[in-house]
Amino acid sequence: MAADLSARLIDFVILLTVLEGVGLAGYHAVTGRGLAPGHYALNMVSGLCLMLALRSVLADAGIFWMAGLVACAGLAHGADVWRRLAP
Image (tube, rainbow, N blue to C red; front, side, top):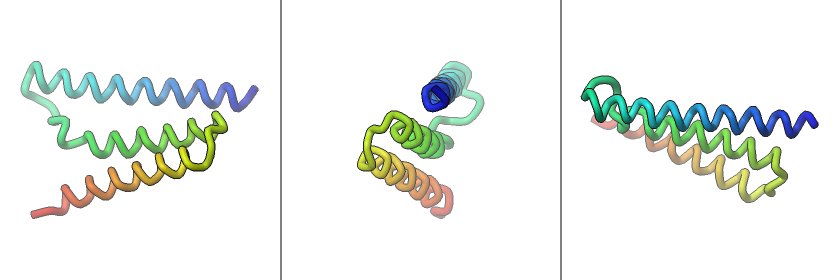
C-alpha cells in the first residue's frame, strides 16, 4: 500500500517535471525570453533519470534498470558540469 502511494507520488512529480520543461521551452520559443532549453535540459534529464531510477525500484523492475538510470543521470550531470565549465 505505501509503495503504491509512493510510486504514484513519484509519477506525479515526474509528470510535473516534464510539464515544467515543456512549458519553459514553449515560453522561450514563443517569446524569445526566459531560459533556452540548452541551459537547463541536461540538468532536467539528470533529475528525471534519478526519479525514474527510484520509480524502477518501487516497481521491482530489477537492478539493471535502476543502475542504468543512475548511470544515465550521472552522465547527464557530468555533461552539464562539463558544458558549464568549458571556456
